[in-house]
Length: 279
Ligand SMILES: [Zn+2]
Image (cartoon, rainbow, N blue to C red; front, side, top):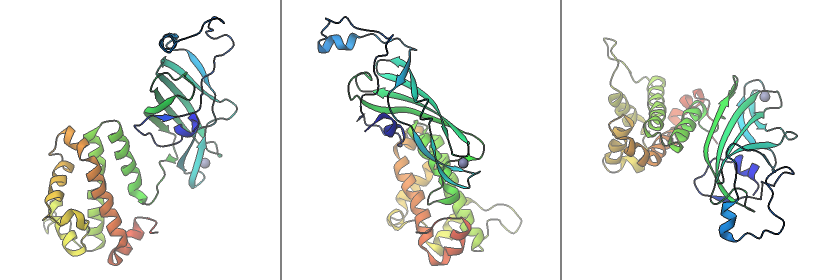
């Protein structure tokens, strides 16, 4: 794999081997011609923190929804300019670049790339330690199969990747509550009492689930035990550690509810309203 390909994929926690991407520049640090490094010495070749380095690799390509193009588009880094980085240490490189849509819309992305040993090695093993993006106006995270909920789900993933447990859970909760209210509204299940006060979310969920069984069977089988556990965390009664520990299960629950709704004939109208693709 090449460095640009790895940077064009979602960040993963494991190190992956990429083609050599760092080559000494003409005026860079040069070794004595007679110098033969041993494995240990190799570790000692100095790198200047803050050194600007050219990265020998192709372009970074990421997909976003572009409002001007009214479609999902691939945004690319500039091929002629190439990619550059700033050395942080021998194991760390900061890479900053601007990705462009064909229409000119831009996304600013930043990566902190970590090497298992030394990023200057031949075919180093690396991973993306941090990733940030700044979308310009009119550019959105692509909405795949979950329509208007895709962005919140993606934000939940990102918060979780950055170790922000409560933040990740809040996005999942937004999806969970929003879909439940939507189903209630499109199926004449009251979300308020006669006096206008809002009904408790749990009551609405219970009624929606009794009528339309939106909670996946795998979660409701054990007398709602797992569901109520997850429900506690999703509603803020869990610790930050719990939020991170159970994030996978919570996300499965929430996407399971969304998948379940898509498959139900009686909820088809609601699904169309959410602008989902149903294949
Ligand atoms: Zn565009």
